Length: 255
Image (cartoon, rainbow, N blue to C red):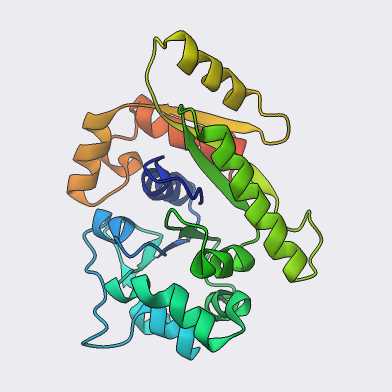
């Protein structure tokens, strides 16, 4: 779940896509890769503290078993691997230790067979940590908003994927982009935003999985309860948007 541009709805999409997948009975682990810890806090889960014990960052660097760090949520079938403040230091620690591109793959291998989906909620950056997380991924989903920099951000993100795949000698089609999710859509639009929106909807290589109009009430109320909107107000159009995204991405069968 990626885009190096901030504020495009990565965490909101991660949380609520997880809800849509869990609704279909899939077992989901959210790996909160952002030191801000918003995906962690959205489920009322405490962030990890490197002063009191191991964290996701130390599990990656020291190649230890992350299972003791996983937190259950109030939603059946959704677990969270929490973030921590020491994730801020992870890029430099990865550069110091070598083998950076392999370390997230090794950490996530501990969960082989336990979950149907592991969603990596990546921070908005192109750095050593996001490189390692991208190298561990089998698919990508890009979040964008209707902004003048959106197409450039998508191009930069895809270029990062290609760079990493070449460094790993992996085929360029081994990290398929499932599609774009356009967030924070406000209609009607002015001419400029309408032109950007049209470009995103008709991207030449990446399909649009759906769009999420601003529905601040449903999303905020669900987050306040520590659950995805699917489990807060399942019949709302907001919940339906995320079910559609899951189906359009081929992750679940269309209703």
